Image 1 (cartoon, one colour):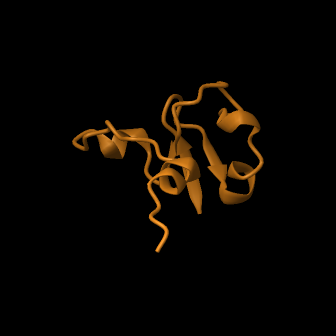
Image 2 (cartoon, rainbow, N blue to C red):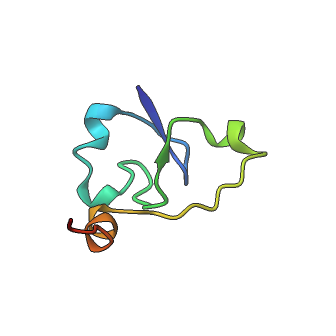
Image 3 (cartoon, one colour):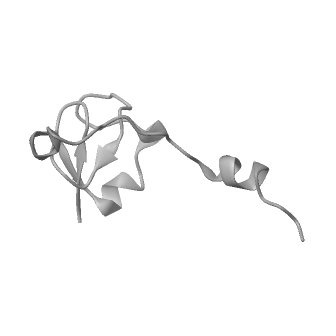
Length: 64
């Protein structure tokens, strides 16, 4: 599977994605994130998104 940097459109593999330092693109060093579609294919797509991490889910988890 390929992932595209949302800053420079650099393509990386899933294996490389898992080893990135602080989530930065290895080419441009930005942390805008990665998507499975290239930037030009997402022109009509609303690119505003909320980033979630595991702490967001753990804080809202209800213990039953």
